[in-house]
Each structure stands twice: as structure tokens, then as C-alpha cells.
Image 1 (cartoon, rainbow over the protein chains, first blue to last red):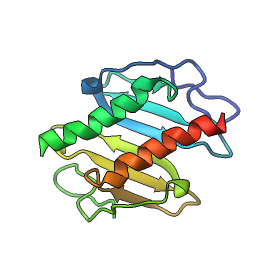
Image 2: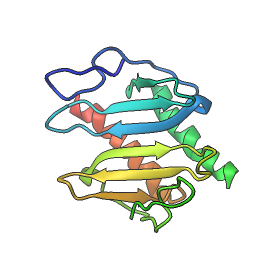
Image 3: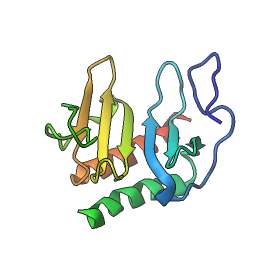
Image 4: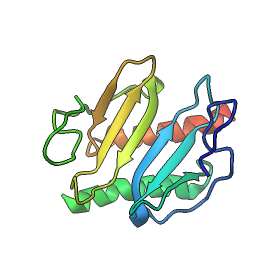
Length: 76
Length: 76
């Protein structure tokens, strides 16, 4: 899903609107830049289950980030 | 600032509570895991200005992420 192309955008091969927060090991947010105009959110899944592009437009994307941030308060 | 240590936490050498969103090229959120209990937010600055650990407890952290997400709507 994380593809390679002339521009340096990484999420040209389709995005998902939803990923279970508990499955997320890492979340990368790339801001728009000269090499790629889009904001891109790349999620690395736990247990080596690969990476997925998360649609930044999906309301879920913001909720996922908020959920991850909230979890950290319950952990500490 | 992003240090190395026995645990695989990356933000043990101090964190900042604030980074100007416009300076941010990439933002990585590491969820808590067996190798590092803390949620860690690592910001890569534009123009090769290095990386900083952002304090996930700081209200600013959530606002920054929200701001980045909002910017993407004005870009497209």
C-alpha cells in the first residue's frame, strides 16, 4: 500500500479510513512539502503486520490520534 | 535530544512542550509498547534542523496535531 512514484508521496496506492488504535505501533504524519503536496498519515501495525496509509480526511484519523494520546494518560 | 538507552525509549533526554507547526516536516507518534512504556512524539523539523521530542502531556501536542490536520484541508 505504501508505494513509490515520481513524486515522493507515499500514499498513492489507496488509503484506509479506519485502523483499530490498539493495533497501531507507530503513526507518522508527513506534512505537505515540495516533494509531496498531500498530508500523509502512515500507520505501522504491531506484530510486523505492515503499514497502511490512513486517509487524513477521514474523521476517524483525528479520532485515532486523539485516542492514542488519551491512552497514554491512562498508562501513566 | 533523541537519545539511546537500555529501554528503547527515544525521548529520555528531555522533551519540549512547543514546536511551531509550520516548522514540522514529520511527526511520529510511538504508542506504548513492551520496549517503551511511554507514548513518544518525535518531531522532525524542516530544512534538516534535526528532531525534537514533544511532550505528549502538553496540551500543545494535541493542538499541534490538530493544526497539522486542519492545514491539510486548506491545502487541498
